[in-house]
Structure formats: structure tokens, C-alpha cells
Figure 1 (cartoon, rainbow, N blue to C red):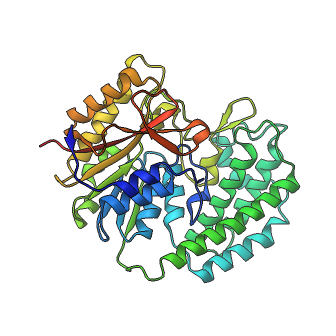
Figure 2 (figure 1 turned 90 degrees about the vertical axis):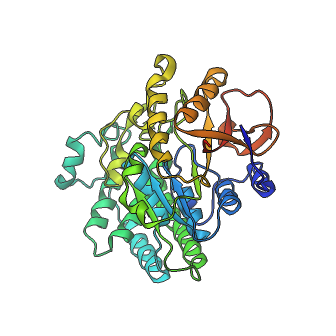
Figure 3 (figure 1 turned 120 degrees about the vertical axis):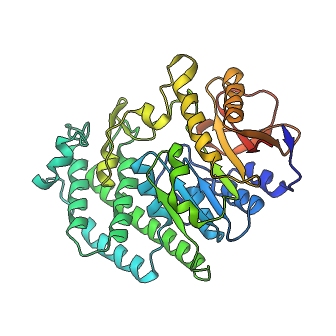
Length: 389
């Protein structure tokens, strides 16, 4: 382990922050295991400068891209999930104040007339491909039809693609609120009310985002690509930039059960409906998005994929590039040493910025941290790496 000379006080202070994820476009969707925006903001400010490239090879809900754009850094995010890249792209896409007002007013006029008895044969492709699974039952079909009606209105409007995506995201947010891990489902009146509230809230966030970028340089780029991290070295677009100053990411956690790609309906019945709402294709099981099955002995597939990914990432790094990643483990005793061994095999050495590693405890995903010697599976660790000398 090598010692860093960087002053990281503001960054480590941010790790202890207990604030909920909010502000700008951050709460467009509750993506699982999201970064704290304050943590991301301070990491970017501490370990990079304006005009640098920030890279997130496991971009998830896109927090890194949003904060990089606000701080005048170029950013590129990759994710194997088309749902994740839809959400990240929508969050980082700027709408003008005129566009936000247009989209909000259009949507709020539509919401009150959404019909739970709506049915459309044109949507049957999604149904036939299984994207309506577990949202076509006695307790869920009305909400499914409301969603279907709203999407039909969006697609038959004259709105621009980025405006349509904003509204699809508002329905994703509302559908998640109504269906995901809920024992009791809302009635149609409450669903319409929540959709209206989400459109209002997201419009305020989008306005804040746009206003904050009003004086930003026009050449700052934010890209989000639906590709696995192990293909990062093949990205031609990286040739347009200097090597990343900072790689800020949170890969899937080894052996930890997080459902990135489904909603769980009453009694853990899963539905791929989020992909249908986002107009994105799915077709994969959890192990695809988690880089391996959590029940596999030794998690060999997971660690093989981590090695493959960071071996590719190494090829786009310079000796100045710093990797900051947040990771949790189902069994810290052997998985953390294994993870560090894999990082070394990929060509990276751990950097020490304090006397001990920095951990944060996350029961119910609350954000607070402490330095400690031993942890359990309810904790995440912040790891720092640079290229091996």
C-alpha cells in the first residue's frame, strides 16, 4: 500500500454526511445502492480539476455524471444495463427552462384523463416479450393500464425525444413508488396524484440543474454508454480526451443481493416492467447485472469479471489516474482480501489516505461512516488505487 499526500479533509468529512439523496436531477429515480451526491461532489473536487475527465465504468443511476457536469468536468459512464443508462442519460440531459415548462404543462393536462381501462394492441410486443410479467394480475392490471396509457400519449405527442424521456422517467419513478416492494398497492386516484407530484418535483430539479449550468463552459461533454466495463479500452471516444484524472465508481457488491433490474411485486414476484417503461430491452437475469451469482462457491465468476473489467480499465489510465470505489461485501473476512488481490492482478496498487480504511455503515442505506478495524456486511468501504509502479 502506498501513501497519498493529497489533502482529503473535505472529502472525508463528506463521507460522514447523513443527508438523503436529493437536489438537481438526483432523485429522478431511486436506483439501488446509489452514491451520495455530496460524497461524489467532494471526491471530484478533491481529486480532479475543471476540464478533467471523470470516468464511471459502473455508472448505475448516473450520480457521477451529474456532479461532474455541475463541476465542469467531462464525464463518461458505462453500464451493462440499458435501464441504468436510460436513467443516467435522462438525469444528465439539460432541458431549457422553456422546455421544462412545456413538458410539465403538457403532462399535467394528461394525467387527470389517464384511464385504467385503456388497452392498446400496439403495446402487445412488450406484453408478448414478458415485460408485463406480474403487472397483469388482478391487483396490478389497473396500474399497468394507466402506465400504458401515459406512454401511449407520450409516444403520440410532438415532444422531442429528450422531453419524452423525461416523462418516461417520471412514470418510472411513480411506478416504482406504487409497485416495488409494496404489500398494499395505491388506488388509481392516489397513483395519478403521485404522478403529478413527481412531475412537479422533477421539473423543479431539472430547473435547478439548468440554472446551475447557465454559466458553464459549452464544451463540457457528458456521455453515457450501454456497454460492459470490460469493453472500455475499445471506446474510440476516449481518444478525444486526456486519460481520466479520476475513476469514481461502485461496482456490484460480491455476494450481496441487490436487485438492479427488476421491481419486486407483492411477495417478491419480479417484473421487468421498468425496461418497458424506459423503452429499453432487457432479457437477462440478476447474475448478468451483478457480474455473477451470489450463491456460487468462491464467487469465481464475479471475481473473474472484476479482473476482466479492471484489466481493461487499466489500459485507459495514466500513472496520475486515481480510482475511488465504494464496495460492500457479504463476507468481509475473505472477500476484501480477494478483491484487493484481483485489483493487484489487474495492475493496481492500493493508496492509503488515512491511518485506516474508511468505512460507512449503511443500515437502510443511511449515509454515515467511521474508521474502524472490523466490519460486517452492512458496511461499505472506500478503496483508493493507482497503477502499480
